[in-house]
Length: 267
Image: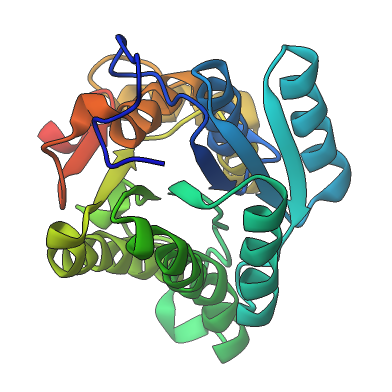
Protein backbone atom coordinates (compact mmCIF):
# COMPACT_ATOMS: atom_id res chain seq x y z
CA UNK A 1 0.00 0.00 0.00
CA UNK A 2 1.33 3.38 -0.95
CA UNK A 3 1.80 6.50 1.11
CA UNK A 4 -1.02 8.88 1.90
CA UNK A 5 -2.31 10.50 -1.27
CA UNK A 6 -1.05 7.74 -3.57
CA UNK A 7 -4.14 5.52 -3.89
CA UNK A 8 -4.27 4.59 -7.59
CA UNK A 9 -7.23 6.10 -9.37
CA UNK A 10 -8.64 7.76 -6.26
CA UNK A 11 -10.76 10.78 -7.13
CA UNK A 12 -12.61 11.25 -3.84
CA UNK A 13 -10.21 12.25 -1.04
CA UNK A 14 -12.57 10.66 1.51
CA UNK A 15 -12.29 7.23 -0.09
CA UNK A 16 -10.28 4.69 1.87
CA UNK A 17 -9.77 2.38 -1.10
CA UNK A 18 -9.06 -1.02 0.47
CA UNK A 19 -7.02 0.32 3.38
CA UNK A 20 -7.26 -1.65 6.60
CA UNK A 21 -8.87 0.32 9.42
CA UNK A 22 -9.10 -0.89 13.02
CA UNK A 23 -11.94 0.58 15.08
CA UNK A 24 -11.92 -0.18 18.80
CA UNK A 25 -15.13 -0.12 20.81
CA UNK A 26 -16.86 -0.74 17.48
CA UNK A 27 -19.80 -2.77 18.79
CA UNK A 28 -21.94 0.29 19.42
CA UNK A 29 -22.18 4.07 19.45
CA UNK A 30 -19.50 6.17 17.77
CA UNK A 31 -17.36 3.08 17.11
CA UNK A 32 -20.12 1.30 15.24
CA UNK A 33 -20.99 4.39 13.20
CA UNK A 34 -17.31 4.94 12.34
CA UNK A 35 -16.81 1.31 11.29
CA UNK A 36 -19.89 1.37 9.07
CA UNK A 37 -18.91 4.67 7.41
CA UNK A 38 -15.28 3.63 6.87
CA UNK A 39 -16.45 0.42 5.19
CA UNK A 40 -18.87 2.40 3.02
CA UNK A 41 -15.86 4.40 1.80
CA UNK A 42 -13.97 1.25 0.87
CA UNK A 43 -11.99 0.35 4.00
CA UNK A 44 -11.45 -3.21 5.13
CA UNK A 45 -12.62 -2.85 8.72
CA UNK A 46 -11.46 -4.69 11.82
CA UNK A 47 -14.37 -4.42 14.23
CA UNK A 48 -12.74 -4.58 17.68
CA UNK A 49 -14.57 -4.95 20.98
CA UNK A 50 -15.04 -7.23 23.98
CA UNK A 51 -18.79 -7.46 23.29
CA UNK A 52 -18.75 -10.44 20.95
CA UNK A 53 -22.42 -10.69 20.00
CA UNK A 54 -22.76 -7.00 19.25
CA UNK A 55 -19.39 -6.84 17.50
CA UNK A 56 -20.16 -9.79 15.24
CA UNK A 57 -23.48 -8.11 14.44
CA UNK A 58 -21.72 -4.92 13.29
CA UNK A 59 -19.29 -6.90 11.11
CA UNK A 60 -22.20 -8.81 9.58
CA UNK A 61 -24.08 -5.55 8.98
CA UNK A 62 -21.10 -4.20 7.05
CA UNK A 63 -20.75 -7.38 4.97
CA UNK A 64 -24.47 -7.45 4.25
CA UNK A 65 -24.12 -3.91 2.93
CA UNK A 66 -21.41 -4.98 0.51
CA UNK A 67 -18.41 -3.98 2.62
CA UNK A 68 -15.55 -5.99 4.08
CA UNK A 69 -15.26 -6.48 7.83
CA UNK A 70 -14.26 -9.01 10.44
CA UNK A 71 -14.78 -9.02 14.17
CA UNK A 72 -11.80 -9.37 16.52
CA UNK A 73 -12.30 -9.80 20.25
CA UNK A 74 -9.59 -7.64 21.83
CA UNK A 75 -9.45 -6.33 25.39
CA UNK A 76 -7.59 -3.08 24.81
CA UNK A 77 -6.55 -2.87 28.47
CA UNK A 78 -4.36 -6.00 28.12
CA UNK A 79 -1.30 -5.69 25.93
CA UNK A 80 -1.00 -9.37 25.10
CA UNK A 81 -4.50 -9.45 23.60
CA UNK A 82 -3.78 -6.25 21.65
CA UNK A 83 -0.49 -7.66 20.35
CA UNK A 84 -2.06 -10.94 19.28
CA UNK A 85 -5.20 -9.28 17.97
CA UNK A 86 -3.33 -6.83 15.74
CA UNK A 87 -1.20 -9.67 14.41
CA UNK A 88 -4.44 -11.49 13.53
CA UNK A 89 -5.76 -8.38 11.78
CA UNK A 90 -2.62 -8.22 9.64
CA UNK A 91 -2.89 -11.93 8.74
CA UNK A 92 -6.58 -11.81 7.88
CA UNK A 93 -7.06 -8.34 6.40
CA UNK A 94 -3.60 -6.90 5.74
CA UNK A 95 -1.34 -4.32 7.40
CA UNK A 96 -3.11 -1.64 9.41
CA UNK A 97 -3.37 1.79 7.80
CA UNK A 98 -5.98 3.43 10.04
CA UNK A 99 -6.59 3.14 13.77
CA UNK A 100 -9.59 4.63 15.55
CA UNK A 101 -8.95 4.54 19.31
CA UNK A 102 -12.58 4.77 20.36
CA UNK A 103 -12.95 2.18 23.14
CA UNK A 104 -13.78 3.88 26.41
CA UNK A 105 -15.81 3.68 29.60
CA UNK A 106 -17.20 6.36 31.89
CA UNK A 107 -16.43 4.65 35.20
CA UNK A 108 -17.45 5.58 38.72
CA UNK A 109 -19.24 8.89 39.14
CA UNK A 110 -17.98 9.80 42.61
CA UNK A 111 -15.82 12.64 43.92
CA UNK A 112 -12.09 12.04 44.08
CA UNK A 113 -11.92 11.39 47.84
CA UNK A 114 -14.48 8.57 47.50
CA UNK A 115 -12.83 6.77 44.60
CA UNK A 116 -10.96 3.51 45.08
CA UNK A 117 -7.75 2.53 43.37
CA UNK A 118 -9.76 -0.08 41.46
CA UNK A 119 -12.18 2.61 40.24
CA UNK A 120 -9.28 4.66 38.92
CA UNK A 121 -7.37 1.76 37.37
CA UNK A 122 -10.44 0.41 35.56
CA UNK A 123 -11.04 3.64 33.65
CA UNK A 124 -7.40 4.44 32.97
CA UNK A 125 -6.81 0.85 31.87
CA UNK A 126 -9.32 1.10 29.04
CA UNK A 127 -9.30 4.81 28.17
CA UNK A 128 -5.57 5.47 28.44
CA UNK A 129 -3.58 2.24 28.40
CA UNK A 130 -5.87 1.03 25.64
CA UNK A 131 -4.88 3.97 23.45
CA UNK A 132 -1.21 3.34 24.24
CA UNK A 133 -1.32 -0.40 23.51
CA UNK A 134 -3.30 -0.08 20.28
CA UNK A 135 -1.18 2.79 19.02
CA UNK A 136 2.03 0.91 19.82
CA UNK A 137 1.02 -2.22 17.93
CA UNK A 138 -0.57 -0.36 15.03
CA UNK A 139 2.63 1.66 14.59
CA UNK A 140 4.62 -1.53 14.21
CA UNK A 141 2.64 -2.16 11.03
CA UNK A 142 2.46 1.46 9.86
CA UNK A 143 6.08 2.53 10.24
CA UNK A 144 7.65 0.04 7.79
CA UNK A 145 5.21 1.35 5.16
CA UNK A 146 5.58 5.00 6.19
CA UNK A 147 1.84 5.41 5.98
CA UNK A 148 -0.96 5.64 8.52
CA UNK A 149 -3.58 7.70 10.28
CA UNK A 150 -4.49 7.38 13.96
CA UNK A 151 -7.66 8.99 15.30
CA UNK A 152 -8.00 9.21 19.08
CA UNK A 153 -11.43 9.81 20.56
CA UNK A 154 -10.93 12.23 23.42
CA UNK A 155 -13.84 14.39 24.60
CA UNK A 156 -14.92 17.92 25.41
CA UNK A 157 -13.59 16.80 28.80
CA UNK A 158 -10.13 16.58 27.30
CA UNK A 159 -10.40 20.36 26.83
CA UNK A 160 -12.49 21.54 29.79
CA UNK A 161 -13.75 19.82 32.91
CA UNK A 162 -16.85 19.37 35.07
CA UNK A 163 -17.44 18.35 38.71
CA UNK A 164 -18.00 14.63 38.07
CA UNK A 165 -16.34 11.36 36.93
CA UNK A 166 -12.71 12.35 37.76
CA UNK A 167 -11.01 9.30 36.21
CA UNK A 168 -12.83 9.82 32.92
CA UNK A 169 -11.81 13.47 32.68
CA UNK A 170 -8.21 12.64 33.60
CA UNK A 171 -8.07 9.95 30.93
CA UNK A 172 -9.46 12.16 28.18
CA UNK A 173 -7.08 15.00 29.01
CA UNK A 174 -4.20 12.56 28.80
CA UNK A 175 -5.39 11.24 25.44
CA UNK A 176 -5.32 14.80 24.08
CA UNK A 177 -1.64 15.24 24.94
CA UNK A 178 -0.69 11.69 23.94
CA UNK A 179 -2.09 12.59 20.53
CA UNK A 180 0.17 15.61 20.21
CA UNK A 181 3.25 13.73 21.42
CA UNK A 182 2.76 10.92 18.91
CA UNK A 183 1.98 13.44 16.17
CA UNK A 184 5.40 15.00 16.75
CA UNK A 185 7.19 11.68 17.05
CA UNK A 186 5.88 10.26 13.78
CA UNK A 187 5.26 13.31 11.57
CA UNK A 188 8.33 12.55 9.47
CA UNK A 189 7.49 8.84 9.34
CA UNK A 190 4.32 9.23 7.27
CA UNK A 191 1.93 8.65 10.20
CA UNK A 192 -0.59 11.29 11.26
CA UNK A 193 -2.21 11.39 14.71
CA UNK A 194 -5.24 13.56 15.54
CA UNK A 195 -7.91 13.72 18.22
CA UNK A 196 -11.67 14.24 18.16
CA UNK A 197 -13.49 15.95 21.02
CA UNK A 198 -17.21 15.19 20.96
CA UNK A 199 -19.81 16.81 23.16
CA UNK A 200 -22.64 14.71 24.57
CA UNK A 201 -23.62 12.19 21.89
CA UNK A 202 -26.67 9.94 21.93
CA UNK A 203 -24.83 6.68 22.60
CA UNK A 204 -25.25 3.87 25.15
CA UNK A 205 -22.60 5.54 27.35
CA UNK A 206 -24.53 8.81 27.53
CA UNK A 207 -27.84 6.98 27.89
CA UNK A 208 -26.46 5.07 30.90
CA UNK A 209 -25.02 8.31 32.31
CA UNK A 210 -28.44 9.95 32.05
CA UNK A 211 -30.12 7.01 33.78
CA UNK A 212 -27.58 7.15 36.61
CA UNK A 213 -28.60 10.75 37.35
CA UNK A 214 -32.34 10.14 37.53
CA UNK A 215 -35.16 10.28 35.01
CA UNK A 216 -33.35 9.86 31.68
CA UNK A 217 -35.70 12.07 29.67
CA UNK A 218 -35.29 14.93 32.16
CA UNK A 219 -31.50 14.57 32.15
CA UNK A 220 -31.48 14.57 28.35
CA UNK A 221 -33.33 17.88 28.32
CA UNK A 222 -30.67 19.28 30.65
CA UNK A 223 -27.91 17.93 28.40
CA UNK A 224 -29.50 19.56 25.36
CA UNK A 225 -29.42 22.92 27.10
CA UNK A 226 -25.68 22.58 27.71
CA UNK A 227 -25.10 22.80 23.96
CA UNK A 228 -25.77 26.11 22.18
CA UNK A 229 -27.22 24.15 19.24
CA UNK A 230 -29.90 22.91 21.63
CA UNK A 231 -29.46 19.17 21.19
CA UNK A 232 -27.11 16.27 21.79
CA UNK A 233 -25.16 14.91 18.85
CA UNK A 234 -25.58 11.75 16.82
CA UNK A 235 -22.93 9.04 16.52
CA UNK A 236 -23.10 9.32 12.72
CA UNK A 237 -22.09 12.98 12.94
CA UNK A 238 -18.92 12.13 14.84
CA UNK A 239 -18.19 9.33 12.38
CA UNK A 240 -17.92 11.89 9.59
CA UNK A 241 -15.09 13.53 11.52
CA UNK A 242 -13.40 10.17 12.00
CA UNK A 243 -13.62 9.48 8.27
CA UNK A 244 -12.19 12.91 7.46
CA UNK A 245 -9.17 12.36 9.72
CA UNK A 246 -8.56 8.84 8.40
CA UNK A 247 -8.70 9.96 4.80
CA UNK A 248 -6.49 11.91 2.43
CA UNK A 249 -8.85 14.88 2.83
CA UNK A 250 -6.93 15.69 6.05
CA UNK A 251 -3.47 14.90 4.69
CA UNK A 252 -1.90 18.11 6.09
CA UNK A 253 -3.32 17.62 9.59
CA UNK A 254 -1.50 16.06 12.50
CA UNK A 255 -1.65 16.83 16.22
CA UNK A 256 -4.94 18.63 15.65
CA UNK A 257 -8.06 18.72 17.81
CA UNK A 258 -11.32 18.32 15.92
CA UNK A 259 -14.01 19.65 18.27
CA UNK A 260 -17.50 18.39 17.47
CA UNK A 261 -19.58 19.59 20.39
CA UNK A 262 -22.53 21.68 19.26
CA UNK A 263 -20.78 24.75 20.66
CA UNK A 264 -20.33 23.38 24.20
CA UNK A 265 -16.72 24.55 24.65
CA UNK A 266 -17.39 28.01 23.18
CA UNK A 267 -19.04 29.06 26.42
